[in-house]
Length: 391
Ligand code: FES
Ligand SMILES: [Fe+2]
Image 1 (tube, rainbow, N blue to C red):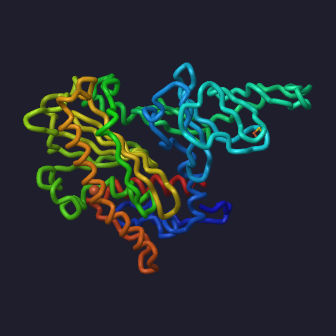
Image 2: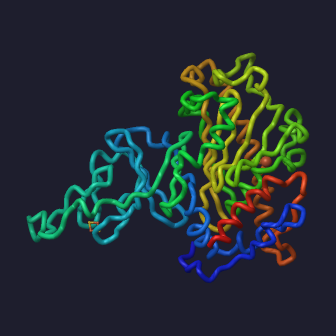
Image 3: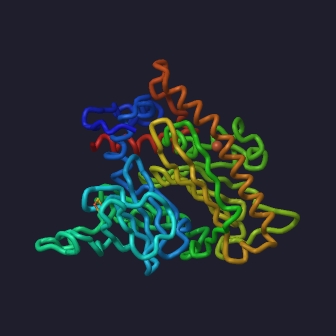
C-alpha cells in the first residue's frame, strides 16, 4: 500500500452517474491503481461508517486488538466497564505503535519504547522519568492532554464500525432505513437474540481482488445459475428481487431460502419472524464493506478487509437465534449452515478474482450494466461515484 497523496488522482465519474441503461461502471483505475486506495480511504471509506471488527472477537474485559485498516494502525479495546473503544494505535510521546499483539492486556497498555502507560479507556496514566530520573511528572505537562486519540465508532449487529473522518451522519440515524426494513422479520428487538458459538461461526476467505468487486458480486443474483448451481436448485434466479435502500444499502432478497435441517432438527427462529415469510431471506451490502445475510434461523455478517488494491480478506461470522441454538442438539444444523455458506463464498472467489484480472485490460473501460439484472451493482457504483464527485 502506498502513501502517495491522493490529491492528483481523479476518476471520471459522470458516466457512472448516468441512468443505468447509459451508465458505465467505475474505470479500471479504481481497481488496479495502488494510489487510489489512499483516495478511497480519504474520500469514500473514511467519510462513512466502515466495519473493522466484531465485538465478539473481544470476549473479555481487558482484551485488546490492534489492526491495520487501509494502512492506518487502529486499536480496539474492551475496557473494565465492558465498553468497546477504538483508538489510533500510536503512543502520544514519540509515536511508536502502542499495541502489537491482540490478547488480554490487563488494566494498562505500556508503550515498549519509554514505558508511558494508558488505561483501556485511552487515558494516559503514567510517564516514567518524564521530568528526569525518578521524576515522573513535569511542569506544563498534563496527562489529560495526551491520551490516546479516539476514532468515532458505533456497534451494530456485533460489528464495530468506524468513521475515520469523524463527520459522518450519526450512526443511529444512518442505520434507520435498514433497521426499519428488517422490523418485518425481526420485530423491534430481534437482534438481541443473536448468539455466536465458538465453533460453527467463523470463516475467513482471502481473495486476490479489490474489495469493491466482492461487494458488487454480493449485490446481484444474476450470476446464481452459473456460479452457484446447487443454491440455484432451490433458491432460483427467478426467486430473487433487488434491494436498494436510500443511497447506502443494496443487494438482493430471496423468496425461496431453504431453512437448515439436520435429520429432522430445525434451528430455533427469530420469535417475531412471520410464519408466512419463513422462506424469505435478504442479502444486503452495508456500503462500503459489510455484507449482511438475514434468514429466519440465522444471520451472517461479512467484513471485507481491504489489504491492497488487489487483495482483500472476507471475515465471516454466523449468529444463531437464542442460547438454545448453541446447544449440542443443534450442532449438526450449525455445521450445515456454516458449510453451506463456505461453499457459496468459495464459489464466488473465481468470479471476483477473474474480474480483478480483467481490469488490467485496456480493452475494458468499466463495462455496462444490464438495466434489469444489475441495478443494485449500479447503485453501489453510484454510491462510490457520488463520494468521489464531492471530493
Ligand atoms: S514513544 Fe511511547 S513512551 Fe515514548
Ligand atoms: Fe455469489
